[in-house]
Image (spheres, rainbow over the protein chains, first blue to last red):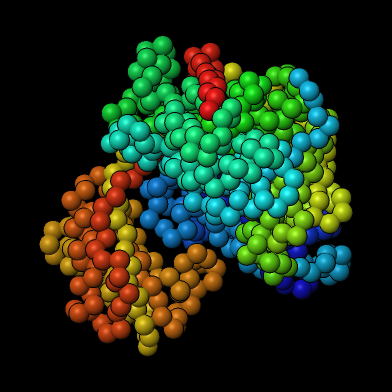
Length: 115
Length: 455
């Protein structure tokens, strides 16, 4: 199976949420959404973001928008203005998740237009 | 009440500091019924309380007054109504300043409303005595733990007081803390006569408000596929075309830059999202998994079928408190061997501070090598950047200890490895850390008040 970055089949946006951040991952096709629903688990995201997020990861689904929403519990180095980090609002976490390398079946790639 | 078929509502300000060109162009470049403006972030309320404590007539978004000065003639001429949370913690002072501007323009008969009741800083002890412990929603701890360090306390009010102000004929509505989507929902309640039990309609207005609350973030700003976004310099701010049945369209004025399609709107729908099926507001619980999203021609996205349920019997209260001190500073280190030299610089700083008796626990200090892989740590890093920005910081309860750190960064220029520069900011100084204490309060204990003034 071809190995591609998640950005090939999804887009994303992130922002702050208390002491953590949320990353909304948006599939670029119906087929990509079905694939991601099965394979882009909270465990996969937690492992990928381990150097950024010190807490757990929880996943929510919004089928109507083909969205998987991930809540990273402790990814800002403190909430409010307590963070010393450059990215104290988690603005770049969406792009970080999109760099995840995934083995994606060719049929999913064929059915998903490139950006 | 004369109920319209459709209403055009724009948001021209996503936060305090957003470009003034947003609202200026919105009133200039196309049709509009309402202009909404969001100036308040959580930290803003605390800053405003501090300003007000030093100067009784301060504590609101002064940018708003400058904006009114610039666009008032068009607002009056085109009868565009404005809803802004510019009142901050001093909405009456904001109203006075706005009235002065209106008088200077020689416009009489303009009605300005103030919505208040959100600011409970002076009522905290009374509310605690009434049985409200203000348990921290994240940790469960009672507010008593930090009561003596509280710097602001504001309830997130709903949209009905805004509708009430519009019902009294206000052209400009000034609020303090309320929900961001409420700035859009308020006008819809007023225009369409939606009631407090029309949960799905209120949810539709909430979804519309959420989509536009960050201004250009739904029209191509901060968009994954940024190369597809034309003319970002003249990016169009969003305009909602709302209908009485709850169906609405996200649009932008013709000829403006940016990109508006299903995907750019979806990007904003997920922004700062928690559980999408339960989006809590004081007016309803909106279900972001309920609606259908589709493109209805160029730069026009339709949302229909939003549903939602009744709200809870509590308001969310945003309480801020002084949570210690922090300082950060940076130096630039050139190559060759930029990263190795920067790492040596950081070690020298910690060693010199320790030598003088100042040690910082791991959770009280930070070093970053910007350019070598900071934002995407563990995912995309390099050990051979051409140059690197060494960014260091400390925090803690002891202000003097935090300030001491700031004195050891710049000396590296002459007493560290070669190629250290970029110290223009001078010595980092300790600044206050504002902590947030999210809590709930019974709705029955909060009274809102709407007052209308005429120029």
